[in-house]
Image (cartoon, rainbow, N blue to C red; front, side, top):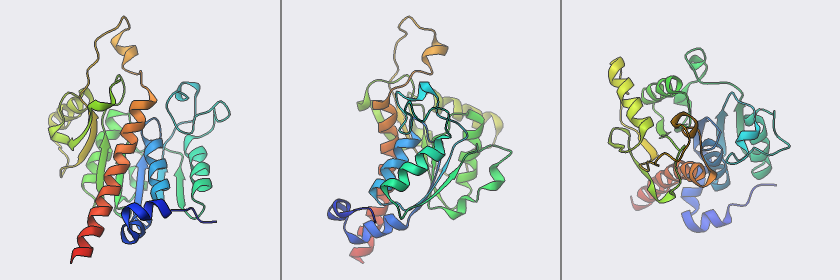
Length: 241
């Protein structure tokens, strides 16, 4: 049985919905941000999606990650998520890769095969490599900046990477790109928050890893929304010609 996109068609129209179904997306990192992005895309009509993550579900994921439940602890995140996505959309093509994107594995990915690359990676080195690689491809890159240590969803924004303000992760990435003398080949959009929480009796190192679903989920949904809006605008533009 095919998934029902009738409500999507009512909002976007047939042309945009069909374009969305044909859009090819690869998402790197399916944790607190990436898992929600993937769910939103598939429920909205994306039928060609690749998900990449090297981790297994652990108990600390349960507070914010889509696939994390007491019954999935210990299982590869991409495999649990793939099964869920196929239950939502049986006709979808879901390529689940239980691996990291790194200097050792980058050659295994041809980003030119995709319309969109979504970066929801935590590792600084791997994130920088993915950004550089994606910016050399024909795919559109969307990147998540830091979603940890945030509480106010109204502070979540979208802008071009070099214009991000108030995000320690973006600042660190820019410093490293400049230090290494190898900046991304083109501009790309980021989801970020400019909220800075004061210390509350916990060490900076420990609190840096604190995160909650109402923030990470909105990061993921916002990434998905950028793809949906792009496709809708393209369809609207074609209809006017």
